[in-house]
Image 1 (cartoon, chains in turn purple, orange):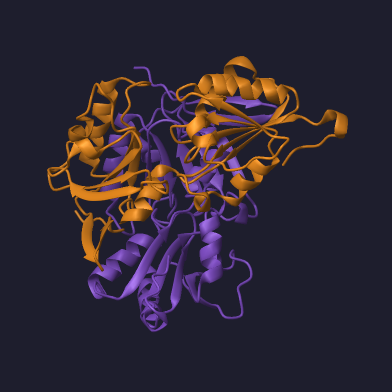
Image 2: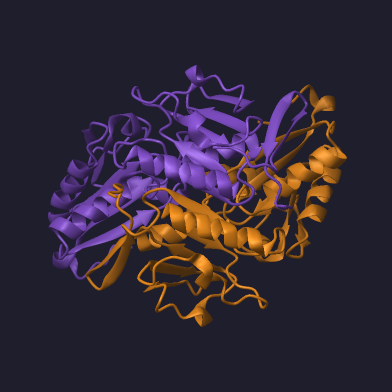
Length: 253
Length: 253
């Protein structure tokens, strides 16, 4: 995809990619190819460590969590030197990850930068956790972050209330904070609502737990847990000792 | 992942996988590996044709669109013969696809079937289309099917109305039907709301178009279009002649 305009005129390039949930087998082929072709790879250290080996010509740029804007600026600086820069997120780069931060910085600081830009999708945590439980997101669903770092808490509560009225399945990211450990209990769903907790899916120490809102023990939720919340139609059953959780395709009122 | 219990006792297996949007490069490594290991591959013909070559020992089972329950039953029948059966969806199997249909049939007909079951996630159309536009789903978002085949139209209207009040970004699947060509206009969003139309993403004839709700020309929407709808915060800008559409991570009221 690099537009080569004669060797002297090749542009730099920023590829914004998602590694998926963790295991290499849930990366896309394009993700693997892009990593292999990169000059520079920028990301939060926890994710860079998942990449595996890099070539001798490649530079890894470790950054702290939360420094998305600094990462985007570094990517633009390196691409201005005609390098191929890869910005790494876990999951999908467009879901609570680097892509939005990159475009914010591009529009604000370098709207005319002579670089190529490619976004490569990945398996976001909602889908990898859902796969472990069966098909909890089999009908209409919503994906929300419960973190109030970037939006007011009253907006989160409003969205949860409206989504409960809509009886849509939910995938909740960033479920815990020291300040608000009981966020999940604000979903305004019936007590019998099915809840799937997926922690470190496709990583070392993977844990899944199927429960209900009334039986939920919030102490098992970590910052790397995705919470899947069913609808009034959602079902669960046991098959060969394993619990499955799915939301039928049909909705009957 | 096959639990081999001695050669005579090996169970059959059903793998429910997603091919992603179309291009092989957006499949996961696990998807490729599962296809290579299958005895039987079942799916809608349009998707089976995307797989590429299969081995001499492998059988492709073509099915018509809409026959999800028949496909699930066939998978259970073949797995009962200790075969490794792969149920193919496009995108992610848990998003308006085969996984929910399979678990419905499993629970109803064969809850004690001695088979192994694996769900392999894939890149769903919301994420592949979003990658082409930049990061339109960069904040909280919802994924809805506009088809009223499996749920009443008044539920769809109710959900669209509540999601407009929540000012969440939307990814709308199955956007057209002969009966209701104007569904998208019922989103109850402001006229200036950004709309990204992604048709045949990562397939031959890929088309993307960025517009607004008031300027939307519904005649360009097909059954293979995903409609991405922005929030009041969403932005667009042009970089090197290409339009980008993103939703910032922050939401300020």
